[in-house]
Length: 225
Ligand SMILES: *Cc1c(COP(=O)(O)O)cnc(C)c1O
Image (cartoon, rainbow, N blue to C red):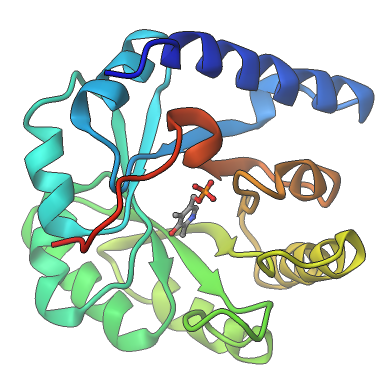
């Protein structure tokens, strides 16, 4: 048990709100998604009890085990979408943020339609060479068109990772490219900003932060399942 996750949640949320206030933005316009990968369920549960409304997970098996132990929360899939897992992902999550290619989107759309629902998704963009995943910005319009053509999907915006450990300017440039691409393809959700770069992300117009270690503490080592 790590005492103090409630306090960390409240401190982080007020630091975010203060940054938004400085920028003249409405705190209600930014969703904080806690990233629970490789975090123990009891820590995550404490944050939800303290008011966290949205949880992001990267690994399907780990997420399913954890969800069974947690209070109600909006669940975001932020990991790599394997097409053979699309059905299980659509069943376990409320939002999929990491659709970076047509096949993944089509598989998710089909799975959601079978369930009789439309799954909210974000298009994952690659705005930094160190990122292994994501659609190239110059391919984003095409992918967005394909995703909008799936009756089982509702495209709400974009998600991107900033360059890890980079200079502030490089981080801002990457996030601005994500914001510009969102403006081109349309949508209202700009999911950028993690533990190390959320201030830059807010400056670039983020409407959704995905924060793991700055909220829950250091992740447990070892392999995920
Ligand atoms: C792990 C992860 C995060 C959170 O990273 P932190 O540095 O712990 O805040 C956010 N987004 C994605 C896609 C991740 O994989």
